[in-house]
Image 1 (tube, rainbow, N blue to C red):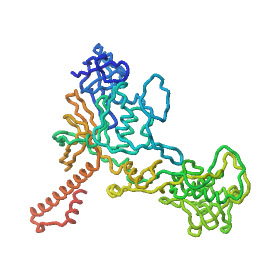
Image 2 (cartoon, rainbow, N blue to C red; image 1 turned 120 degrees about the vertical axis):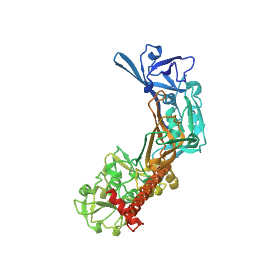
Image 3 (spheres, helix red, strand yellow; image 1 turned 45 degrees about the horizontal axis):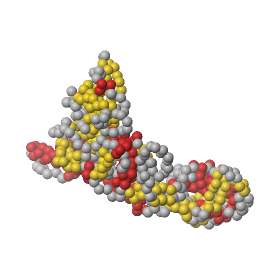
Image 4 (cartoon, rainbow, N blue to C red; image 1 turned 120 degrees about the horizontal axis):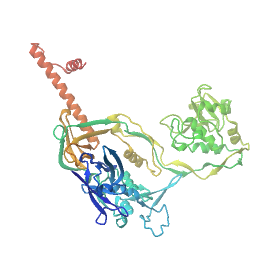
Amino acid sequence: MSVVKIAKIQGNLHVPNSSDTIAMLTSVLPDTTQITWKKNSEYQMQFEAYNNGSDAYSMLSPGNMVEKNGQWYVIKHPTAGWSGNLETTTVVATHISSEINRMRVYGDDAPTDFGSYDHAGKSQTVTTVSNATDAETAVNVSVNDIMQWGFGNQQDRWGITYQIVGNFNSHMVVNPYASGSGKDVISRILSSWTDAVFWPDNLNLRIYSHDEFFKDRGHRLDYLHDTDTITLEYDTTDMVNAARLVGATQESGGGTGISEYETTTQGTGRASEVIADAKKYLGVPYVYGGAGGARGGNPYSGMDCSSFVSQVYKDFGISIPAYTVSMELYGHEISRDQVQTGDMGFYGSKGASHHICLALDNNTMIYEPQPVEVCKTEPISHYPPTWWERNDDMAKIVGGSSQTVDNAEITNSDSQSTYYFAPFYFVDEESRKRWGLYEGDDITSDTITDKEQMKAYAETQFKPNPDVSLELTSTGDAIPGDLVRVEIKPANYVTQTGVVGIVSYPDSATSKATVTLNSNLQTILDYQRGQQAELKSYHDSTKSMIINAQFNSGQSQTTWNETEVKAFDSSKRS
């Protein structure tokens, strides 16, 4: 018989005690009790019980709690069903620690009159880091700083305590004290300290360092001895070992701004403004199909040749497409000696142009060249366009004619956005040599101003190795964080890795637990060595078979070179 303790909860979240109504549910079907745990993501229990007319069965309703192995779970999804004159209820319950999602922690970003209600959170001193568009707060904090802010005064209100097990270095964390749920507080820690493990004991919220969570207790799991099923699967789907890195921007220099929804008459002779505006995009990386101009978006995230020219025109209230063939229709052809600031240089045949640049003057052009390069200036003679065109609206601005621009006022600005360091391409060379190149999306930061720091940050965002899904069934008790020795003799595979997931059936006499083991570089390299050993073993046995066959047939040749062995081996395989 499977027995589950059930409690009817009164008032706020808490671990059930003597003031709560507690009963023993004796109608649980043993083979249906299942506990699922996955590191930092899932912790729940489920079971099915039949209606035996007891008070305990009637308490299977949302918000009440059930207990197993000393841990309490909150009922979330009870589903009643009837079959063969028998009423049953299937229950899905999440670990009580998941209920921290119900509580809110308030920071200085949300001044609020709470009246007579108590709340969590307190004021903190922060350092403001400014960039071109907004301001964020970056603070050098420890894990304890964030846990104390979020949960330090929650014992009386929610019954929550916390522990930090192991050593953690302090980090610069953006907005560590922003308002959010209790779950947000934990997520903030796990995203900033990527090796940390959240492993709660009821409402005692515990944050473990990697070395304190994963412990070698001398356990081993050998195929055909401790387990009859092991699956090992490679998956390179999410691998990333190369990306373009884009750091923070700063206000500097002078430029031109646009204030929308106004109408004004512009001044005359503004070629210098057009030149300054175009040059503020120097260093912006080439991105095929990128942002800018008629395409919208942040031009500093990357533009191609046509969106760059379209963006400069847009800065002066002139709307032209961001596609070279379409742009041909927005100007009239001029001769090379007539070229002036703002004119467009096209490459290729008319009606099928494939590239474009912008003239800064009669001798200099500015353009987005090609992938892996950035916006730059160059003498026109170094890469002369096939033909030139002039847009009359731009010519009026450059040449000095007054004009009225609807819905956009072009204003002089004292500053413009420039990068602290030019965006650059970065590759994890070890990963590339081992697996090949796996490019990912841009990695950006609005706060990092140092190139080396940007590299270090990118390395935390890369996924340089494939996932290796290593799962096995076990009749024994699996321990979260247990470092176990795994051996698959038929595959010559031996490794030591940690338990990061368990699906157990604590009351079943027949169902075996499924154990998920940690995917890391060591388990992958151990597997590769196992494959190489298996291949060598097969090769050696093939060679011995050849020699023995020749000896038994009376042939004089008793040794074969490697080429002969491989040829024979290939013929047998085919």
